[in-house]
Length: 259
Image (cartoon, rainbow, N blue to C red):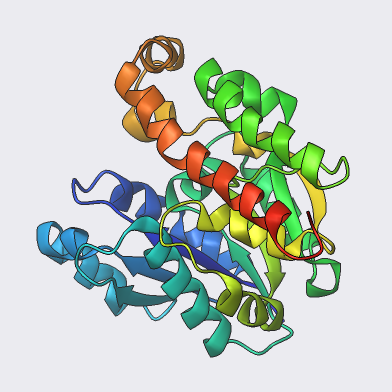
């Protein structure tokens, strides 16, 4: 049974749609179908692109509630995909920008080989950015997200996880069982998922999780990296999910049996 890919999508400016269209043939090579839910503002501002996506039977497209925060969008998509698939089917949870970069760049063959090589019986798998992938990211991303990883190592017996993860594979039945335990509506729900799966997770490093923004935006990587590293607004954006993720870990540690 081929896996399905599951990706939330927010693209009001229509930047991602052309990339998704260009890489759809590769998605169809390895995935049974793609579950995508689009934010309401994306539907409003990109109606033709959304309609084109909905007409392709490969895509199972849903519309998010207007104003839904990211975590709520992700959770609804994951619940819908898990309930629509056989329990033993592998689901690959990714993000459109990361996936189209992996498929549209020099990492394509490595990514496709990874999808072919991971079977439902091997899951759940959490993909970490490899050292080479982290080198492409702004240093602020690595330092701030690394705080959550370091705290997690302290609280989870030395196990190291990327709580702000970009790609995960697991069985539909396992995802269905996990989602009722996920309570947060912001991006810290990604950390909740890792905590909930911690005892079963296998970790694999991936060079194809290199920084996607220069490719997506058509920008020089070094120039964009410098901009992000000196941007106070971007630091605030990172802290906006890093701090709640630390709270997830603190709450887990304080719960019965963990304190």
